[in-house]
Length: 479
Ligand code: NBP
Image (spheres, rainbow, N blue to C red):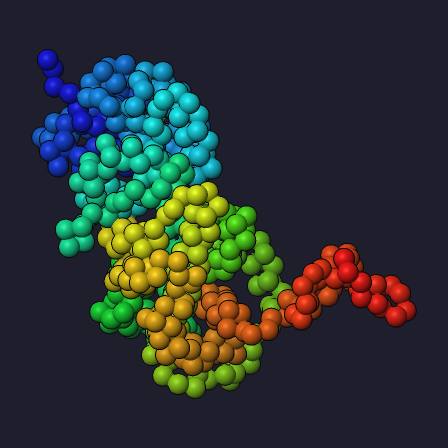
């Protein structure tokens, strides 16, 4: 009998090719297939020596080369291409086989596909894969959704190729149907917030502190040795110390200041709006990118010369560098707390039973937001699985209360000097909102009742009430 593959990968562009190589390098026999056969041939020609690949030109041959239950990883462009591949492969598969979508699908699409394939007796496993092409090859953070049963057959293989921290795999069964893609989406949203906060820290040190990019690179290198230590801080130092060969200028000064986005940050915010979870850190990051790319509006503002503060305004009353480190850490805690709250809210909404501590654990390596910091998040949820917000965990409470004076000084300096710091400022406003014993929402309830008879609740008795605003005596009635 000819050799069978433990796993197959269809879609051999950069991500699929590297995932297939990763499986092969770990000693697994990998069936490989791509719509256009050329990519399959190239993979085997260039990397065939790395392990055992079974190339197939047709979908039928590919499926026939897999051991049962069949495990087929789909790594194609998210959207219509994924549906096309599912339509091609589902009829060729048998009950109990698995179709694993490891692309960046929207979790609602994954839920739809999972439900449809379940009716045909197939497991559809929406799987978040983070870490880009390098991660796919050397060990990504992997977030599989789908049924528990499918994880039993698939999990060991995915754990094998995932990143490891102290020998522990950065891969865990996240929860049913779209849970894996949802968590991957929020990971990307948090990544947006983290990057925005780092960019604001740089901007403050540059504009308010008067430091050069190279000097700020050294600051980030130092920070990377401390509690902020993370992949994003590390690469920030690398980018800041880069000099443009053509002009001799700092690299950051020759790059257009319009950040792009692929959409996962926007998806995170859209989902958060539907769930009613305030992910202001992620939203500010998405909006800041949109503002940076809004060329017409920025040109109009430049032409109109929108006035800023006077040149002497607001010198920073403290050690700016130390204060910015504190503000960055505190704002980062807020952004992560919000992202985890969103995961918990979705888990409750869809009955996913996601363990938030396990998510922090599998993000410690392989993915873009990998950081020491995630250990503390894991510990917080280990201590209290139902934690309402990370901000009330001892470690984070201490960190934020220690940081808050510096954080307030930084936000004040940014406002006084006209330096945009939406991430820092909004994180602080969220923190103060959570702290407040009374919020002005009571006034908003009054306004709503006034113009729309939307009713309100009282602090001193049960029930819903309405004031007859249009009458002279403005009597209150039970609604
Ligand atoms: P692309 O997203 O560029 O997709 C190219 C692949 O899709 C090729 O194999 C192509 O086949 C195939 N394909 C297309 Br396009 N339409 C198809 C169709 N109708 N039927 C069958 N195959 C079709 O590849 P990628 O950059 O490797 O990304 C793959 C997935 O991974 C995407 O969902 C992407 O969002 C995600 N991704 C994730 C990360 C990460 O960090 N996790 C990074 C980058 C990408 P062809 O060769 O015949 O044209």
